[in-house]
Length: 355
Ligand SMILES: *Cc1c(COP(=O)(O)O)cnc(C)c1O
Picture 1 (cartoon, helix red, strand yellow):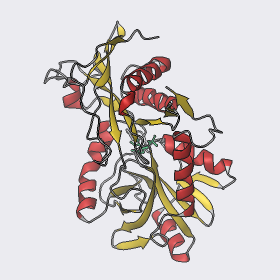
Picture 2: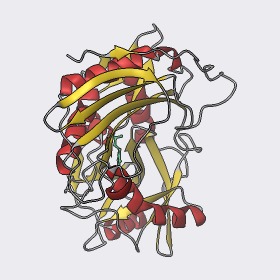
Picture 3: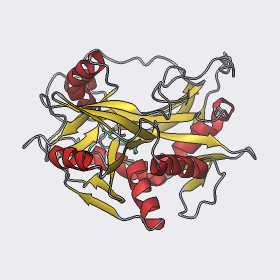
């Protein structure tokens, strides 16, 4: 059990009003959680303090060698005013896997969950209630040794900030257009692809700019070796419905193991829909599209939950998916996952945790 010290803000900010639609990740709540680490001492001084700028040495290792990790999950307000988290232990488990990969010390699972619950409870009034909105929770850890040499840091800060959010894509649940990248790669097996760390996003920026300039909202990555097999989208895992079977790339070491991905696989299995986790090539996808077997394409991630894909572009080939609307399965998955998250549907798989 953490003994969390609490310092309340003296200047509470006005809560966002209902008439300004929320965007993603631009507004932050009144408080944040912080805990420090020192080799030999372990994690210490857990505290909730007013949201404020950090003071760090310019020589802090995180600025130079990128030793940092992050997570993303959401809190939801139910109609009967309870606060729910969705499968937080999956995020915590993944956080410690990321930590292991990039030499950041582990955080005991129960302490991690306690910290999330405490800071969410503190700023509970900030959880928006309009359809499609929620409170995004961003835990992250940074290396803070003031040192310009390459080695794991001996000091860290673990921080949790909170942001009331609306739809991740301005398209909402409308289909997005996706660019299949043939020039750059995001990750390779043995690299950082499985870890939720800023470095992966840094590697993705140039492609994202290119895709945006061409009118596409996200990049779909191919494997880094053969550049043939589909991996995932910028911040989402990807699913295809081909002839009634749901297919998604198997976790191979370079793909981020999404909590939403796992939830979608479990729900499909629960409904008796065949699911295959395997390699899938761009060629197979184009053949499936040509023969009419490709029924739906959608991305999965905490931010957008389910994001239908309406168009894929590979080199000069455009591929329109379905009739440009939202696929039946995509819609059902969106309704079910959000229904469980909001406490509107029975939580048959035991996924929600009350704060
Ligand atoms: C976070 C993330 C996802 C989605 O994971 P969820 O746990 O479903 O939110 C997918 N791909 C990448 C690269 C990510 O960083």
